[in-house]
Image 1 (cartoon, one colour):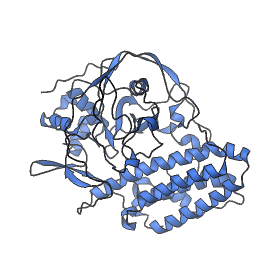
Image 2: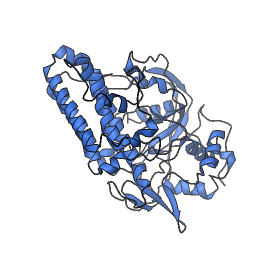
Image 3: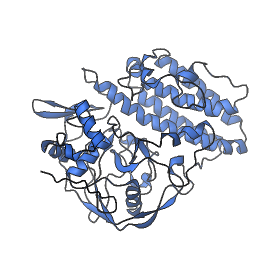
Image 4: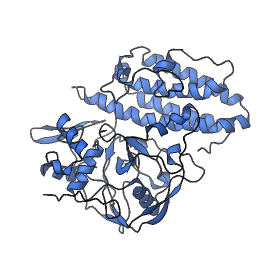
Length: 439
């Protein structure tokens, strides 16, 4: 869905703003930084920069530019991510061996496509621009997704460097967590999913009814201090806390703490985009998988909220509009979760947008009545609706203007490199028999 105004000046202002932010994020990195691929889930920075450019070239210029010819034939193969309808693509785990084109050459590619797209938009009539609007806006939000992934990925790349280089941001002051509060939600027959004229990905549609039993949801995210209690109580060594697949992953990969935590002389340290520091007890725990989030909830005698519970609680709390609600998103330039704001009295949710993407207990599946779009664009979300879990809320790497109550992010159960955290829930139909008591 899109409400993009068919005014060329406004479209190009938005285009330039999104595109320049990608370049600003890449600016602190050397060409070598931009080429490295530290694991299969990570893509090199220059690949992100090229892929989002490929998106505009493939889905906008190719269909509307008179006498279209690709900037470079091989780029269509190198920078296609997963669009089978477009043609073959280079294997994702091997992107790090693409030493050429280099970071500078990718910049040349970006500038070429930018100039051609500006010329195209300036020359189209309002009717054509109106039809093109949904594809252009999808391209903007697609690039914002990759801006977030660029930061997640370079964090992993830099974490593997023994020099422990910093990217950006400042270390947060040492803080302690406050008391965890709870928000009671009556439930009932509610509506979830996107409505209105604003942008939404197809997986947020259609809006539909959902029955929710009464439940309660934690007013803030789980903190590092609380996670340390879980670890001290044998959380990573007690099979009864874990789903079977999760316990197998713990043993196979030797998980003993969240990703990016290392212990030195009895002190836990955490790698961040602004360096490696002792774990700050009052900040949200981050970079934990769905398996870990579920195990922690079981240890605490609670559970993870369903995605419908999360969305309904947020909307009922008056925080459907992320822009109005604020939050620790990428525009704060901390690039790391922050402490929860002080409780203001009463039952109000904190840390809804930003800080960490919040795992839910919901599998990533289509909403009732969902239909993917026709053509290659239809491959954007629908074909990934298997073996993934839904996350909500955004994180400290999410660009401003890209978070909303209905946004459905998704990752595999095992994923830890994404900036993910935990919010607990209790009561309601989501409760299950598998419980354990701390201690």
